[in-house]
Length: 471
Image 1 (cartoon, rainbow, N blue to C red):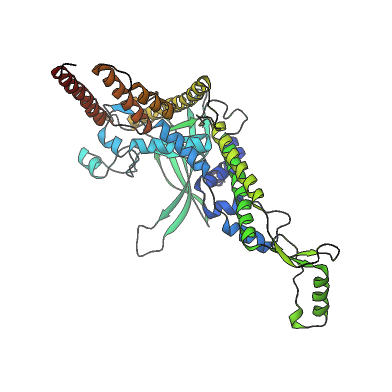
Image 2: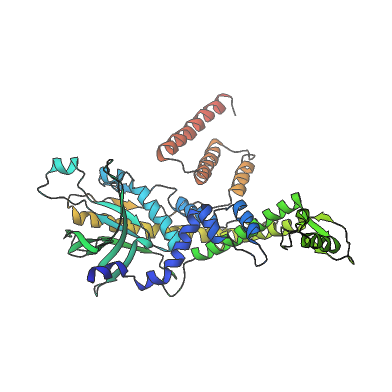
C-alpha cells in the first residue's frame, strides 16, 4: 500500500500547475501534435472543412523563441570559473554536457515553467573504489537539470532545507540487442540519509534498489523565479502561450482566406436547388445534390436575389486586418515579456524612453544571471558532499549587458569620424566600435585582445606617418 502511494503522490503545487506545465511544454515543442491541440474549431465548420484547415495550419513558435532568447542573452558571455575540476566542467552531466550546457537547460526550463531543479547524483557501485577504478568507470558526482514535471512531490523541514524529493522516471532499456526493449515507470525517493527506487509493472509496485545517501542532505536545488511566482499566481509563460495560440488561429484563418480567394465558393440559385431535389426524388442518379451548407460548401440564394450561379471569394481586406492584428499581438507579446527595446512605429522614440527600455531589459537579465549563479554554486557544493576531492570553482556570471540602440550608436560613431582630431581620439573611436561589435555578437577574450593590439599598433603607425609628413 505504501509503495502504491509513492506512484500516486502529487505535491499541491504540482497538482495545481500540471496542466499548465504540460501545455507550456507542448507549445515549446511545437509541431503537428501541438497544432492539433491548439487549433480552435468554429461552430459552423463541418468535419472536412476543419480537417483541411488543420492539415494546412503552420505554427510560428514564439514561445520557444522567447524562452531560448532569454537564455542566449543571459549566457551570451560565458561565466568565469576559476579553480574548478576541468573534467567535471567538460562533462557536468556524465552524458557529455558541459556545465554551460546544463545551465542553459536550467535557464530555459525556468523560462518555460517558472520552476526547475538541479539534481546531483553519483553512479551506483559496490566494492572498493580506488583512483584507477573511479577514473575507468567514471565513478564521480554529476548534475542534471530537471523540469518540474519530473519532480512530482517534495517537502521541506523546519530548518528550511529539503526533507525529501520524489522524482518520476521513464526508463527505456535496449542494452541487449537480442531481447525486445523494455519500458518501465519508476519513482525515486531521495531522503537526507538514504534513497529508494520503485518500479511499477502489471504485477504492482515494488522496490528494486536503495542505498545510503552519502551527501547527508537531499542533493537537489530548487530554482524558481522569486518575484510573483508561487504566490497564488501563474507564471508569465502561460500568457505567452495564449497569445501565441491566438496568433496561430488568426494565421490559420488568414491562410484559409487565401485558399478561398484562389478557388472561390459556389453560389447557386434556389430554383437550381429545388430542381436538384426533384431529380433526386425520382431516383435519377444524375440528380444527386449536396445540401450541406458550410464555409466550404455551396451557398443557396433565393430567386428574388441575384438568382445567378457564380463563385465568390473573400476580399484581401480581411486578410490585411488579420495580419495587422497578428503584428500587434507579436509586438505586445515581446513587450509584456520585457524584451521589446525599440519603438514599434516609424516615429522616433525619445532618448528617455529608450533608456528606460534598455534599463528594464538589463535588470531582467541581471536578475536571471544572479539566479543561475546561485543555483550553480549550490550544485558544486553538493558535489563536494559526495566527493570531498571535488574542486569548487570561483564562479562569476556576467551582469553587464550592452542592450542599446545599436543603429543610433553606430550612426553616432560614423559622424564622430568627421571631426578633425588626433590619433588618440581615433583610437578611442575604434575601441567604442569594438564594444558595439561585442554587443552584436560576443567577441572572445583572445580575439578582443588581438583587436586592441591592432588598434594600438595602427594608432602608433599612423602617428609616425603624420610626424614624417609634417602634419
